[in-house]
View (cartoon, rainbow, N blue to C red):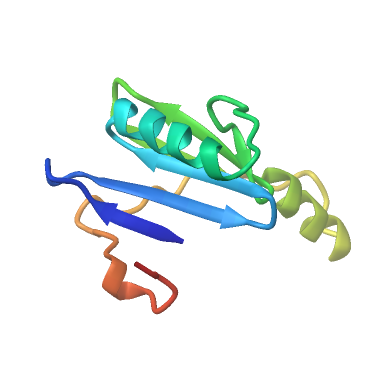
Length: 111
């Protein structure tokens, strides 16, 4: 993972896993510039907005300013493995509003 703080105070993130690149930022023009710069260095195919990464489905609510990740397929596999039937109830558990993720919380962040 690579991240950089922009002069505007916003961040841009580049996540690389094998041959997949995920770029995230609030600033679309910064994303486009990074994609253009990278395309001079490596062969790339732009698959547009990401809907799935590493088995997780990404859902966006741009008006509400929310992003959610789900792993329904993985959970179904786990439930099948342990013979849990489909009669169970699901629950949505959002991250508490006061909880803020920071780069210092993980030793895996690389700048």
